[in-house]
Length: 372
Image 1 (cartoon, rainbow, N blue to C red):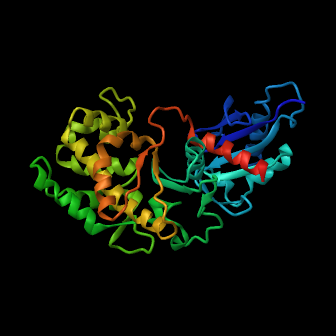
Image 2: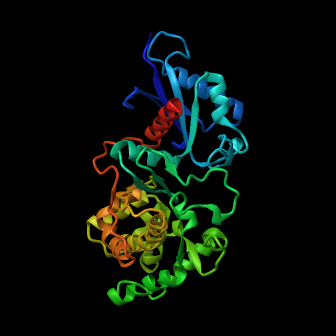
Image 3: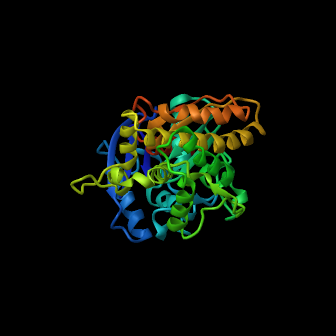
């Protein structure tokens, strides 16, 4: 009898779906990738995923004998049966049940989980404790994971009402930051240094209106707030930097355009981090503001958690912006402590040992559905 394995699939991995083969202890022992940029339909995707999963087979045994179960991590929101309510990166998945389709094709249990929840499951697998997971990228995702590895308040069967979203699960979308607080912090820049323009807040708002053809408002459509991820995300950090440097933008064309002097693509976030290491005042202040807004929004999330438990739950951060942790954590903690919280906040993977958290979280989900 050959050993059986768990398969994790990260469907949000850029232009390709990443696949991992894991042993019973969830050690990664094999990898694969399925290019998905050219896939245009549900049947094509499910058939190619089936073949890609079977190609991970490490033994010359039955196509199905070696697989115990499969876990899918995907951006989007799902119904309780796994049907996509919102497919964030592949529109043809809307209203379709990829979880059930793969289960029928592979004859094994298949689970599906939102990619931020998958990251939270990976963090839980690494830490083996109850935790909050906040991940920053184009937005701000999150998860509250119980001590036994269950997602608390998953955004399942969403009724498309913003008020139905729990702040621990969709922090960037569900949590508001009052505009008066944004204005206060941006207007205060000129009190710290004459390097900043008095028009920074005005420019920030004008840029947002232009980018969104309106304002990314707070869930209740209150025109006095912003969704937190407008500020607290990788994209939000770039928005702040762009506003702070609007009067000296010619010095920072590489960051603002994403191109170096030779026209080659660069990572603007990494460039801001490099500038911070050089003690550049605009980069340092961008990180400080990011931290302040993270603290303002984070305190609201911790308020919601404190309403349900007396435990002080650690918060783990992930995503590229979390690499700037040394630059933003002090201002973040200032706001969180002011609001009465004492939670530990730290990067989940400062050493780089975790690998792809979405893939690992998908494997955790695979093992969970096998053991259910």
